[in-house]
Image 1 (cartoon, rainbow, N blue to C red):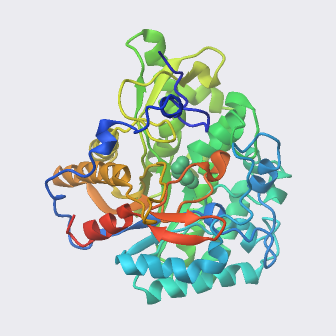
Image 2: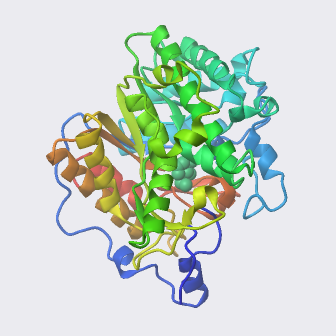
Length: 477
Ligand code: IFM
């Protein structure tokens, strides 16, 4: 039987069907757990830790003057979120942050990437600053530093203030200036202690799923025009914000976070290969070539022309101190007339998949790191997200033996080690995610955490993978 692969949506996957058919366990690959030989040694100073994002964990969406974000509006649309939930409470991190920092400290992690919620800082996205919102990040940053953990905030992880969406959101070029203002406000308040900053998280996902397909907030089903406008305006906003941050301090280490997933055609046909080139341009290159080279992919040039003004490419190009790379899987692309750029996710090759239906392909991370090393001048890179959704049910003893997650992390870390041996400048690895959390259009139905969250009680239970990453960070895995 063939299943149409739905690599990014929260629809039943090949694996769900197997489970429904009583076939249970994911695959022998996942069941086998960690490899017998120890992980290779990582350089001293290599940063270990986890990542989260504000909307996915904080909750308290109406507290202390926070404005509404597009995701609350989107979650209110019938059918938009698979389990019908909202991020209103999530992991209640807004109140439990001290416990969560203590968890990270107990693992000896040296870094933490979180995101700052723009609607907490500027409830209407521009204009008045809500200092109570900034107070929260003040407390968090102080606690992290006290625990010996480097705070690495990201300024935008998808929770756009609804008030800005009402003015066009990422379809509006003025977003660049508004985002730069917000970046300056955040850095002005936290920059005496926070030295590592990321501008955006995964702009291509925002463009494609939020604006092209309407499967993420703001739910625009605007096809290629909207996807490319959103891409270009995010690129501009990123350039403007990075410059605003640089103006705050020459000492900041500045970066941005891209979802870089190698794109592979499902067949050798010319149509599938051409679709793959277009998808690669849209998913990877428009952001990567923009910031690294000040160039936009030729294959998108005609479509981008209406949005690109003189001087834009100079603003978009920025000498990053480090590039954040989020990697989950390769994208298997097929010519699909009528889909965005006549391309879409095709059938997956045989092999293990995660609870998201994503194939498990650590080698894809090697391809990304290899390309950055050989084609993009070997920038400093941090793996800012990598992880897996599994069905993590507590056993009779209450513990969660998520050896499939350990196998996933182990496999990808070996690829990072190989890239380092080949000369890549990878300086850290942050697993996605510290906690189970609100997985966007999937709601609470997918669990990525190294720490299990029992949502009704908000009890945190570290999974076996948490102890494993702690051991890896200590050079003992
Ligand atoms: O949960 C998301 C995160 O917000 C962005 N990167 C991918 C993760 C898993 O889907």
